[in-house]
Length: 260
Image (tube, rainbow, N blue to C red):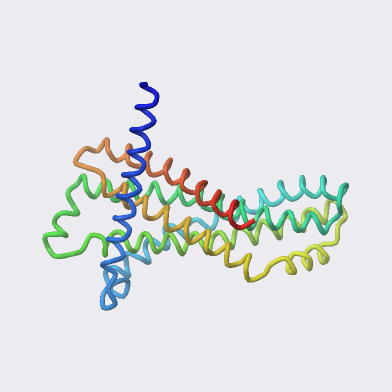
């Protein structure tokens, strides 16, 4: 009985958490009015700062991981596929593996590790120091000033960095494999371009939009959920990171099931 009680409580907590998170997201974008939103100068500056933090500052680690993972994965994959079905199937499998799975997921994990945790700590410490309530008394909308710039910068960074990450992985993987295993890089690149179509690009963009939206929303939600105790900052950061990873896998699983 205790096991069923525990499962029931967990299911109820998860259901209520989803409701709170959905309500938070709806409330945030309900304040995004046409005469304010990101075109407000103060909000625009915050948006640029967050875009630099989440996107531009992550280019170095994204580039390194893309080159390394692309070479490792492609070299091992081409070694197997070249002896079984040939280079054409290798390119198709490599493209599906990177564009559909590895590119978005690895980029999402980097966004969670770098930006999601940083946003939770930033907003959590601001709440602990009492920096948010005075702004509310001055009539500044917390969602408009704190949440929307961070969510939008996370979405934009996820999409652009995932595209950049996937392109670097594919190029370095194919050229390294062509160098080591004597495959035609030009032929592999031609086969790759044939595989890229509107539907695959749309699924890629949609998946990364959802990844960025979920990670950014959860980071802000848990950051603003911090109370007056500094210990809650680390607790909320842990929850945000773990739950963001779970949601990424759930979204990815949905795409695997319904887009194959």
